[in-house]
Image 1 (cartoon, rainbow, N blue to C red):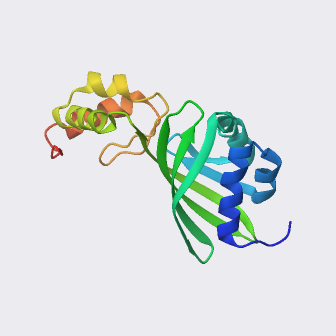
Image 2 (spheres, helix red, strand yellow):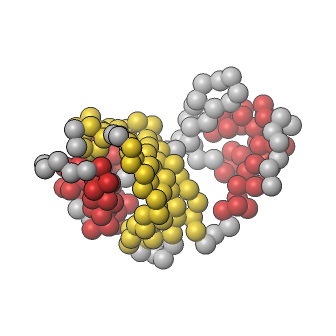
Length: 174
């Protein structure tokens, strides 16, 4: 692979998702590539393609809002328009080594055009008041949670513990 700059690497990566070109993404990623998101914890390249690549079937277009490059790192903020017409925003942190993508960390944003702020407020209120039933009902089984002073786990039980510990301790945000 010819050496390309980091901005072009990121743009090529997102373009390959739009055009469903897995071979392009495979070439852009290091052999020891890792991917992290709120639902994936440092998964390897094979697991990344098994978990994440199928989503390209739903993607219509990425609109890059910001792309910041410094040294061997990049941050990107984008809006993704799905073929269904829905949209969402995310931010991603890229690390590069030898002209390839070494790691990506995704920070999920909210879908556009839905009432995400209401959902966030309800979840915040549930944590603040200790409403464990609501928290457990609305947290996926494999979402990492951490209670104060406790290790991260991927169980709904940890969200119940967090809600019980945080009850009355959180400042409700509006």
